[in-house]
Image (tube, rainbow, N blue to C red; front, side, top):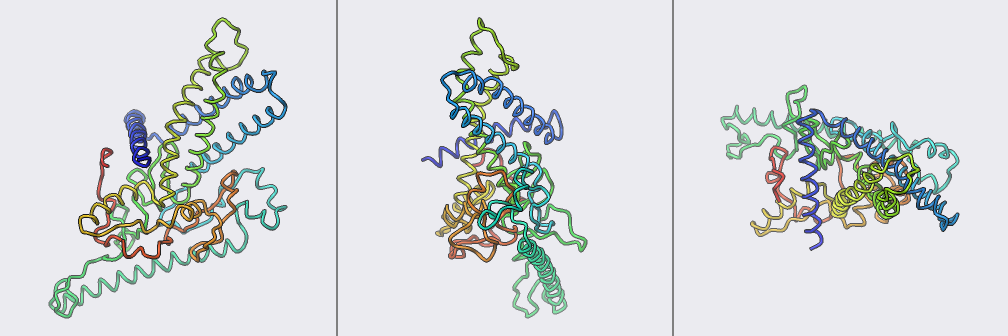
Length: 416
Protein backbone atom coordinates (compact mmCIF):
# COMPACT_ATOMS: atom_id res chain seq x y z
CA UNK A 1 0.00 0.00 0.00
CA UNK A 2 2.76 2.46 0.95
CA UNK A 3 4.78 1.97 -2.28
CA UNK A 4 1.61 2.50 -4.38
CA UNK A 5 0.75 5.69 -2.48
CA UNK A 6 4.32 6.94 -2.85
CA UNK A 7 4.27 6.13 -6.57
CA UNK A 8 0.97 8.02 -7.01
CA UNK A 9 2.27 11.10 -5.17
CA UNK A 10 5.52 10.94 -7.11
CA UNK A 11 3.71 10.82 -10.47
CA UNK A 12 1.58 13.80 -9.43
CA UNK A 13 4.60 15.86 -8.37
CA UNK A 14 6.65 14.97 -11.45
CA UNK A 15 3.69 15.65 -13.73
CA UNK A 16 3.24 19.16 -12.32
CA UNK A 17 6.97 19.86 -12.53
CA UNK A 18 6.95 18.61 -16.13
CA UNK A 19 4.08 20.93 -17.10
CA UNK A 20 5.89 23.88 -15.55
CA UNK A 21 9.09 22.95 -17.39
CA UNK A 22 7.29 22.68 -20.75
CA UNK A 23 5.57 26.04 -20.32
CA UNK A 24 8.87 27.67 -19.41
CA UNK A 25 10.59 26.01 -22.35
CA UNK A 26 8.02 27.45 -24.77
CA UNK A 27 8.53 30.93 -23.32
CA UNK A 28 12.26 30.95 -22.69
CA UNK A 29 13.73 28.34 -25.03
CA UNK A 30 16.68 26.75 -23.26
CA UNK A 31 15.49 26.72 -19.68
CA UNK A 32 18.47 25.13 -17.94
CA UNK A 33 20.42 28.28 -16.94
CA UNK A 34 17.15 30.09 -16.19
CA UNK A 35 16.04 27.36 -13.80
CA UNK A 36 19.41 27.36 -12.04
CA UNK A 37 19.38 31.15 -11.68
CA UNK A 38 15.81 31.05 -10.38
CA UNK A 39 16.71 28.34 -7.85
CA UNK A 40 19.78 30.25 -6.63
CA UNK A 41 17.82 33.50 -6.22
CA UNK A 42 14.92 31.85 -4.39
CA UNK A 43 17.11 29.71 -2.13
CA UNK A 44 19.47 32.61 -1.37
CA UNK A 45 16.61 34.98 -0.61
CA UNK A 46 14.87 32.45 1.63
CA UNK A 47 18.11 31.71 3.48
CA UNK A 48 18.63 35.43 4.14
CA UNK A 49 15.04 35.82 5.34
CA UNK A 50 15.43 32.82 7.66
CA UNK A 51 18.56 34.14 9.40
CA UNK A 52 17.22 37.71 9.44
CA UNK A 53 13.79 36.97 10.91
CA UNK A 54 13.14 33.36 11.94
CA UNK A 55 16.51 32.69 13.56
CA UNK A 56 16.59 36.02 15.37
CA UNK A 57 13.09 35.65 16.79
CA UNK A 58 13.60 32.04 17.86
CA UNK A 59 17.11 32.24 19.30
CA UNK A 60 18.61 35.74 19.57
CA UNK A 61 15.60 37.83 20.63
CA UNK A 62 14.10 35.07 22.76
CA UNK A 63 15.11 35.52 26.43
CA UNK A 64 14.20 31.91 27.21
CA UNK A 65 16.87 30.61 24.82
CA UNK A 66 19.97 29.27 26.55
CA UNK A 67 23.50 29.55 25.22
CA UNK A 68 23.52 25.85 24.38
CA UNK A 69 20.32 26.17 22.33
CA UNK A 70 21.72 29.23 20.57
CA UNK A 71 24.90 27.38 19.58
CA UNK A 72 23.06 24.23 18.51
CA UNK A 73 20.62 26.27 16.44
CA UNK A 74 23.41 28.17 14.74
CA UNK A 75 25.39 25.00 13.97
CA UNK A 76 22.33 23.12 12.68
CA UNK A 77 21.24 25.99 10.43
CA UNK A 78 24.74 26.54 9.05
CA UNK A 79 25.19 22.79 8.53
CA UNK A 80 22.00 22.45 6.48
CA UNK A 81 22.83 25.48 4.31
CA UNK A 82 26.35 24.14 3.72
CA UNK A 83 25.15 20.64 2.84
CA UNK A 84 22.39 21.46 0.38
CA UNK A 85 24.46 24.27 -1.21
CA UNK A 86 27.49 22.00 -1.69
CA UNK A 87 25.49 19.10 -3.14
CA UNK A 88 23.47 21.37 -5.42
CA UNK A 89 26.72 22.86 -6.73
CA UNK A 90 28.18 19.38 -7.27
CA UNK A 91 25.02 18.13 -8.99
CA UNK A 92 25.27 21.03 -11.44
CA UNK A 93 29.01 20.95 -12.12
CA UNK A 94 29.57 17.17 -12.17
CA UNK A 95 28.92 15.60 -15.55
CA UNK A 96 26.68 12.52 -15.35
CA UNK A 97 29.02 10.50 -17.58
CA UNK A 98 28.75 9.13 -21.11
CA UNK A 99 30.08 5.93 -22.71
CA UNK A 100 32.34 8.03 -24.94
CA UNK A 101 34.23 9.39 -21.92
CA UNK A 102 36.84 7.21 -20.17
CA UNK A 103 36.09 6.75 -16.47
CA UNK A 104 37.94 9.25 -14.32
CA UNK A 105 37.86 10.28 -10.65
CA UNK A 106 35.96 13.49 -9.79
CA UNK A 107 39.17 15.30 -8.87
CA UNK A 108 38.40 18.35 -11.00
CA UNK A 109 35.66 19.44 -8.59
CA UNK A 110 36.57 18.35 -5.08
CA UNK A 111 35.33 19.24 -1.64
CA UNK A 112 35.42 22.81 -0.24
CA UNK A 113 38.72 24.38 0.82
CA UNK A 114 38.01 23.92 4.52
CA UNK A 115 37.84 20.15 3.96
CA UNK A 116 40.89 20.05 1.66
CA UNK A 117 43.22 21.78 4.12
CA UNK A 118 43.34 18.99 6.74
CA UNK A 119 43.91 16.17 4.24
CA UNK A 120 47.65 16.11 4.90
CA UNK A 121 47.02 15.77 8.63
CA UNK A 122 44.62 12.84 8.37
CA UNK A 123 46.14 9.46 9.12
CA UNK A 124 44.84 5.94 9.52
CA UNK A 125 41.06 5.51 9.25
CA UNK A 126 40.52 9.29 9.07
CA UNK A 127 41.81 9.34 5.49
CA UNK A 128 38.77 7.32 4.39
CA UNK A 129 36.52 10.25 5.32
CA UNK A 130 37.94 12.33 2.49
CA UNK A 131 38.16 11.74 -1.27
CA UNK A 132 40.75 9.07 -1.98
CA UNK A 133 43.34 10.50 -4.37
CA UNK A 134 46.40 8.39 -3.65
CA UNK A 135 48.48 6.39 -6.09
CA UNK A 136 46.36 3.25 -5.77
CA UNK A 137 43.26 5.15 -6.89
CA UNK A 138 45.12 6.56 -9.88
CA UNK A 139 46.29 3.09 -10.81
CA UNK A 140 42.75 1.73 -10.51
CA UNK A 141 41.39 4.46 -12.76
CA UNK A 142 44.06 3.68 -15.34
CA UNK A 143 43.03 0.03 -15.25
CA UNK A 144 39.39 1.03 -15.75
CA UNK A 145 40.32 3.23 -18.70
CA UNK A 146 42.31 0.35 -20.21
CA UNK A 147 39.33 -1.97 -19.62
CA UNK A 148 37.01 0.37 -21.51
CA UNK A 149 39.49 0.52 -24.37
CA UNK A 150 39.83 -3.27 -24.43
CA UNK A 151 36.03 -3.69 -24.46
CA UNK A 152 35.74 -1.26 -27.37
CA UNK A 153 38.44 -3.12 -29.31
CA UNK A 154 36.81 -6.49 -28.60
CA UNK A 155 33.42 -5.24 -29.77
CA UNK A 156 34.98 -3.76 -32.89
CA UNK A 157 36.64 -7.11 -33.59
CA UNK A 158 33.34 -8.90 -33.04
CA UNK A 159 31.62 -6.61 -35.54
CA UNK A 160 34.32 -7.22 -38.11
CA UNK A 161 34.04 -10.99 -37.69
CA UNK A 162 30.23 -10.80 -37.95
CA UNK A 163 30.46 -8.78 -41.14
CA UNK A 164 33.02 -11.24 -42.55
CA UNK A 165 30.75 -14.18 -41.72
CA UNK A 166 27.83 -12.50 -43.48
CA UNK A 167 29.94 -11.87 -46.57
CA UNK A 168 31.22 -15.46 -46.63
CA UNK A 169 27.63 -16.67 -46.30
CA UNK A 170 26.63 -14.60 -49.32
CA UNK A 171 29.49 -16.06 -51.33
CA UNK A 172 28.38 -19.58 -50.40
CA UNK A 173 24.91 -18.92 -51.79
CA UNK A 174 23.16 -18.47 -48.46
CA UNK A 175 22.10 -14.88 -48.10
CA UNK A 176 22.12 -14.05 -44.43
CA UNK A 177 22.95 -17.64 -43.44
CA UNK A 178 25.80 -19.21 -41.53
CA UNK A 179 27.54 -20.44 -44.70
CA UNK A 180 26.72 -24.10 -44.06
CA UNK A 181 23.31 -24.12 -45.75
CA UNK A 182 21.47 -24.44 -42.45
CA UNK A 183 19.37 -21.36 -43.13
CA UNK A 184 20.08 -19.82 -39.69
CA UNK A 185 19.93 -16.07 -40.18
CA UNK A 186 22.68 -13.98 -38.66
CA UNK A 187 21.48 -10.85 -36.92
CA UNK A 188 23.92 -7.95 -36.87
CA UNK A 189 24.72 -6.65 -33.37
CA UNK A 190 22.64 -9.51 -31.96
CA UNK A 191 24.24 -9.64 -28.51
CA UNK A 192 25.58 -6.15 -28.08
CA UNK A 193 23.87 -2.93 -27.10
CA UNK A 194 24.29 0.04 -29.42
CA UNK A 195 22.59 3.43 -29.61
CA UNK A 196 20.93 4.28 -32.89
CA UNK A 197 20.19 7.86 -31.82
CA UNK A 198 23.77 8.96 -31.13
CA UNK A 199 25.93 10.04 -34.11
CA UNK A 200 27.67 7.20 -35.91
CA UNK A 201 31.32 6.52 -35.27
CA UNK A 202 34.04 7.20 -37.82
CA UNK A 203 33.69 3.61 -39.10
CA UNK A 204 29.99 4.15 -39.79
CA UNK A 205 28.77 1.96 -36.91
CA UNK A 206 26.59 3.04 -33.95
CA UNK A 207 28.45 3.59 -30.65
CA UNK A 208 28.42 1.05 -27.84
CA UNK A 209 25.77 1.33 -25.15
CA UNK A 210 26.62 -0.31 -21.79
CA UNK A 211 24.05 -1.78 -19.46
CA UNK A 212 21.84 0.71 -17.62
CA UNK A 213 22.70 3.38 -20.20
CA UNK A 214 19.95 5.36 -21.94
CA UNK A 215 19.82 8.11 -24.51
CA UNK A 216 18.72 11.58 -23.37
CA UNK A 217 16.76 13.42 -26.05
CA UNK A 218 17.56 16.80 -24.45
CA UNK A 219 21.33 16.32 -24.12
CA UNK A 220 21.33 14.25 -27.35
CA UNK A 221 23.77 11.69 -25.99
CA UNK A 222 23.78 8.49 -23.97
CA UNK A 223 24.09 8.81 -20.19
CA UNK A 224 25.58 6.15 -17.92
CA UNK A 225 22.95 4.90 -15.44
CA UNK A 226 20.48 7.44 -16.76
CA UNK A 227 17.70 8.38 -14.33
CA UNK A 228 16.08 11.49 -15.80
CA UNK A 229 16.88 14.91 -17.23
CA UNK A 230 16.50 17.67 -14.65
CA UNK A 231 16.29 21.29 -15.84
CA UNK A 232 16.94 22.49 -12.28
CA UNK A 233 20.55 21.34 -12.71
CA UNK A 234 20.57 21.86 -16.49
CA UNK A 235 21.80 18.31 -16.98
CA UNK A 236 20.91 14.66 -16.57
CA UNK A 237 20.96 12.73 -13.33
CA UNK A 238 23.33 9.86 -14.02
CA UNK A 239 26.16 7.77 -12.66
CA UNK A 240 28.54 10.50 -11.50
CA UNK A 241 26.12 13.08 -10.07
CA UNK A 242 23.20 10.98 -8.77
CA UNK A 243 24.71 10.94 -5.27
CA UNK A 244 24.89 14.72 -5.10
CA UNK A 245 21.38 15.11 -6.54
CA UNK A 246 19.86 12.79 -3.95
CA UNK A 247 21.70 14.34 -1.00
CA UNK A 248 20.63 17.78 -2.19
CA UNK A 249 16.99 16.63 -2.14
CA UNK A 250 17.39 15.15 1.35
CA UNK A 251 19.16 18.11 2.96
CA UNK A 252 16.96 20.65 1.19
CA UNK A 253 13.89 18.85 2.53
CA UNK A 254 15.36 18.95 6.04
CA UNK A 255 16.08 22.67 5.65
CA UNK A 256 12.53 23.43 4.47
CA UNK A 257 11.08 21.34 7.30
CA UNK A 258 13.23 23.27 9.79
CA UNK A 259 11.87 26.57 8.44
CA UNK A 260 8.29 25.29 8.71
CA UNK A 261 8.76 24.11 12.30
CA UNK A 262 10.61 27.20 13.51
CA UNK A 263 8.79 29.80 11.41
CA UNK A 264 5.42 29.90 13.19
CA UNK A 265 6.47 32.72 15.52
CA UNK A 266 7.83 34.76 12.62
CA UNK A 267 4.66 34.15 10.62
CA UNK A 268 2.41 35.30 13.48
CA UNK A 269 4.62 38.34 14.04
CA UNK A 270 4.45 39.12 10.34
CA UNK A 271 0.63 39.12 10.37
CA UNK A 272 0.46 41.58 13.29
CA UNK A 273 0.50 44.74 11.20
CA UNK A 274 0.07 47.01 14.26
CA UNK A 275 3.55 46.21 15.59
CA UNK A 276 6.80 47.73 14.38
CA UNK A 277 8.89 45.70 11.95
CA UNK A 278 12.59 45.98 12.76
CA UNK A 279 13.93 43.44 10.24
CA UNK A 280 15.62 43.96 6.87
CA UNK A 281 13.33 41.43 5.19
CA UNK A 282 9.88 42.85 4.40
CA UNK A 283 6.74 41.15 5.66
CA UNK A 284 5.90 39.81 2.20
CA UNK A 285 9.34 38.16 2.13
CA UNK A 286 8.59 36.24 5.32
CA UNK A 287 5.20 35.18 3.96
CA UNK A 288 6.90 33.98 0.77
CA UNK A 289 9.50 32.13 2.87
CA UNK A 290 6.88 30.24 4.89
CA UNK A 291 4.74 29.35 1.86
CA UNK A 292 7.69 28.19 -0.25
CA UNK A 293 9.16 26.21 2.65
CA UNK A 294 5.89 24.34 3.21
CA UNK A 295 5.34 23.63 -0.50
CA UNK A 296 8.93 22.58 -1.20
CA UNK A 297 9.14 20.47 1.95
CA UNK A 298 6.22 18.42 0.59
CA UNK A 299 7.17 18.34 -3.12
CA UNK A 300 10.92 17.83 -2.72
CA UNK A 301 10.28 15.42 0.16
CA UNK A 302 8.14 13.26 -2.14
CA UNK A 303 10.90 13.30 -4.76
CA UNK A 304 13.54 12.40 -2.17
CA UNK A 305 11.42 9.53 -0.82
CA UNK A 306 10.88 8.26 -4.36
CA UNK A 307 14.61 8.34 -5.09
CA UNK A 308 15.39 6.55 -1.82
CA UNK A 309 12.90 3.82 -2.73
CA UNK A 310 14.55 3.39 -6.13
CA UNK A 311 17.96 3.13 -4.45
CA UNK A 312 16.62 0.48 -2.04
CA UNK A 313 15.57 -1.62 -5.06
CA UNK A 314 18.65 -0.61 -7.14
CA UNK A 315 16.64 0.88 -9.99
CA UNK A 316 16.62 4.16 -11.86
CA UNK A 317 13.41 5.93 -12.84
CA UNK A 318 13.69 4.51 -16.36
CA UNK A 319 14.48 0.99 -15.13
CA UNK A 320 11.54 1.09 -12.72
CA UNK A 321 9.23 1.81 -15.65
CA UNK A 322 10.86 -0.84 -17.84
CA UNK A 323 10.82 -3.47 -15.10
CA UNK A 324 7.06 -3.09 -14.69
CA UNK A 325 6.70 -3.94 -18.36
CA UNK A 326 9.12 -6.87 -18.05
CA UNK A 327 7.10 -8.32 -15.16
CA UNK A 328 3.89 -8.12 -17.19
CA UNK A 329 5.48 -9.78 -20.20
CA UNK A 330 7.10 -12.51 -18.10
CA UNK A 331 3.83 -13.14 -16.24
CA UNK A 332 1.96 -13.66 -19.51
CA UNK A 333 4.64 -16.16 -20.56
CA UNK A 334 4.45 -18.06 -17.27
CA UNK A 335 7.82 -16.82 -16.09
CA UNK A 336 9.08 -14.54 -13.33
CA UNK A 337 11.22 -11.47 -13.87
CA UNK A 338 13.46 -10.10 -11.13
CA UNK A 339 15.67 -7.06 -11.19
CA UNK A 340 19.18 -8.44 -11.78
CA UNK A 341 20.81 -5.54 -9.89
CA UNK A 342 18.75 -5.91 -6.70
CA UNK A 343 21.22 -7.19 -4.09
CA UNK A 344 19.24 -6.33 -0.96
CA UNK A 345 18.60 -2.82 0.32
CA UNK A 346 21.71 -2.66 2.52
CA UNK A 347 24.03 -3.68 -0.31
CA UNK A 348 22.18 -1.39 -2.73
CA UNK A 349 22.69 1.65 -0.49
CA UNK A 350 26.35 0.73 0.06
CA UNK A 351 26.92 0.59 -3.70
CA UNK A 352 25.02 3.81 -4.38
CA UNK A 353 26.98 5.83 -1.81
CA UNK A 354 30.22 3.86 -2.40
CA UNK A 355 30.46 2.83 1.25
CA UNK A 356 32.41 0.09 2.94
CA UNK A 357 30.64 -3.26 2.86
CA UNK A 358 30.98 -6.59 4.62
CA UNK A 359 30.93 -8.29 1.20
CA UNK A 360 33.54 -6.52 -0.96
CA UNK A 361 33.58 -6.96 -4.72
CA UNK A 362 36.39 -7.20 -7.23
CA UNK A 363 34.50 -4.78 -9.49
CA UNK A 364 35.19 -1.75 -7.30
CA UNK A 365 37.75 -0.27 -4.95
CA UNK A 366 37.32 -0.23 -1.20
CA UNK A 367 34.37 1.91 -0.21
CA UNK A 368 34.34 4.99 1.99
CA UNK A 369 33.20 5.45 5.57
CA UNK A 370 29.46 5.94 6.10
CA UNK A 371 30.06 9.33 7.72
CA UNK A 372 30.90 10.76 4.28
CA UNK A 373 27.14 10.88 3.67
CA UNK A 374 26.98 13.49 6.44
CA UNK A 375 29.89 15.59 5.13
CA UNK A 376 30.27 17.89 2.11
CA UNK A 377 32.89 15.78 0.33
CA UNK A 378 33.19 14.55 -3.25
CA UNK A 379 32.97 10.76 -3.52
CA UNK A 380 33.29 8.88 -6.84
CA UNK A 381 30.69 6.25 -7.81
CA UNK A 382 31.27 2.59 -7.00
CA UNK A 383 30.98 1.51 -10.65
CA UNK A 384 32.66 2.66 -13.83
CA UNK A 385 29.37 2.41 -15.73
CA UNK A 386 30.47 -0.62 -17.76
CA UNK A 387 30.42 -3.36 -15.11
CA UNK A 388 27.65 -3.92 -12.57
CA UNK A 389 27.25 -6.33 -9.70
CA UNK A 390 24.32 -8.70 -10.19
CA UNK A 391 22.51 -11.23 -8.09
CA UNK A 392 23.79 -14.78 -8.39
CA UNK A 393 20.63 -16.19 -9.99
CA UNK A 394 19.98 -13.25 -12.32
CA UNK A 395 20.19 -15.37 -15.47
CA UNK A 396 17.19 -17.43 -14.33
CA UNK A 397 14.91 -14.38 -14.20
CA UNK A 398 16.32 -12.14 -16.92
CA UNK A 399 14.61 -10.89 -20.08
CA UNK A 400 15.87 -12.14 -23.40
CA UNK A 401 18.04 -9.68 -25.27
CA UNK A 402 15.55 -9.23 -28.10
CA UNK A 403 12.77 -8.44 -25.60
CA UNK A 404 14.64 -5.64 -23.85
CA UNK A 405 13.20 -2.16 -24.29
CA UNK A 406 15.33 0.40 -26.07
CA UNK A 407 15.28 4.18 -26.13
CA UNK A 408 13.37 4.02 -29.41
CA UNK A 409 10.15 3.40 -27.47
CA UNK A 410 8.46 6.58 -26.29
CA UNK A 411 6.12 6.61 -23.30
CA UNK A 412 3.66 9.29 -22.34
CA UNK A 413 3.51 10.88 -18.91
CA UNK A 414 0.24 9.09 -18.22
CA UNK A 415 1.66 5.60 -18.65
CA UNK A 416 1.67 3.46 -15.51
